[in-house]
Length: 298
Length: 298
Image (cartoon, rainbow over all chains, first blue to last red; front, top):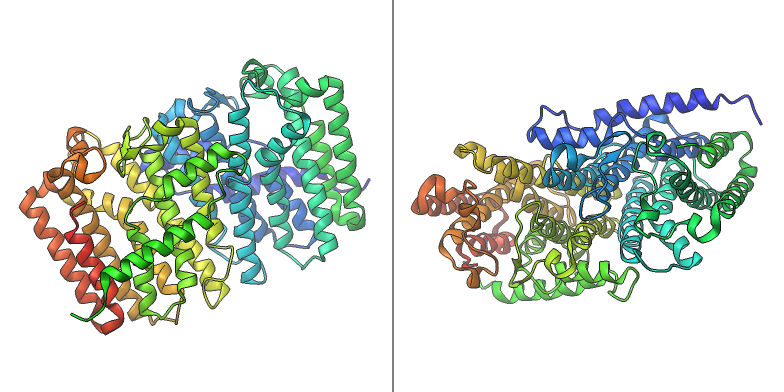
């Protein structure tokens, strides 16, 4: 497709994000030490940084300054990290393993996990407003609003709510899709859109295309998650496998079967790639990320 | 002091805030219904709205549009409401009664309480960025940053962390003060500052005076809380009384004695009022609020 060094680019962004996230979290020597320790534990040295990678890849389309992109990516990643901390807690999924490490409430206790998640959400909005990230301050306000909506009860938290209240229920495919569009898709879409506000202005048509890409990739991400949850063992996945099925939670695999879920993921990838066509070579990182997300093994 | 109708003003702001908060929360008929029900339950029809009152009172100093002030006040109140929901949970204070009603986790379950608190925090940043609240977008970005910092690990969450990790420990007066400056003071200070950004520009000297006022009132609020917690019974307070002392948490009363704590509250009020002097009649609502906060009985 091109001579773009995707692996090298991905590695460079991941390294850059690690440094940026660390710099945007108070040191564990800062009072209250235990809280900052837990915040750093949950955010640093873990994860593929899929959302910041999407932010950087979208930034390539608009020739955005990487200095801006890393802070926008850090904000999204902090929201993602806080949601995992709270989602793993006994009141929710009661998971003890995440990215191969004990979950935050196991390592630090429930009260600290609750507070660390709360503080990470605040920190995300702090990072997004501590410096100039868009040419116009009004665009940066729009970025904050996008992140707030993607995170709240009509976005990620709403999806978790639908998920929570659906345990043991039969969901139809449209209901399952709505749940995941909120639960995983909203923040992934936001990661792409935030990157797109860090550089040159986009036409409505261009932003619409990025949005189509983002929606398809967000949903594909969850379909693949369900496939991996069904196929993989806990060691490969770095978290407890088969948990959703055991909890009688509906998944794409339970609704479509394994082959049907794989076909769905492939269709979504094709739609995402088609939306990128007019961006030409500037869309190459987004294209390869779609490939990476759908073909990943963990 | 003046013919300003404080009670009438307070009542009008409280009514206006109820309408504004309700309008800024999704209906309980909106999916996921149970989550929105819990969010509305925790925010509406409860509390004295001290923080929005401070936002409106500070707005009077800068001739701010009430339309702007109500949304700034709503954002602060949502952060306050979410912190109460999470603070009441079993992992934290394990309180069953709040404002005379069952706490959110008692009424809706722990998982919903966790999610409702998370979603309320997001909603606060949504409200603060959904419309123009300051003449310059850059000032509005500053408002978002103030709220994020006041809420996070170097603000309210940090204070809750210091509180959490201090149970059973001896705290010195400076340590106790630092804890409360973070836990309660940061958000109260933010409520005042947000109001001050909604109107005419302030000089550094003027903003410094408002800040002094806000810091004193924030601390006084907590000192009075400790006094009331020691003196009142649960019926008057609308929450479980004497809980901090029973949990061996340090309070102003345990450190200074009841008389000493009352003197401290009076000193802080005097310092707050002195800082307002140059604002003349435009500072009257702030002055009367300081009075109200220190003299309240619940």
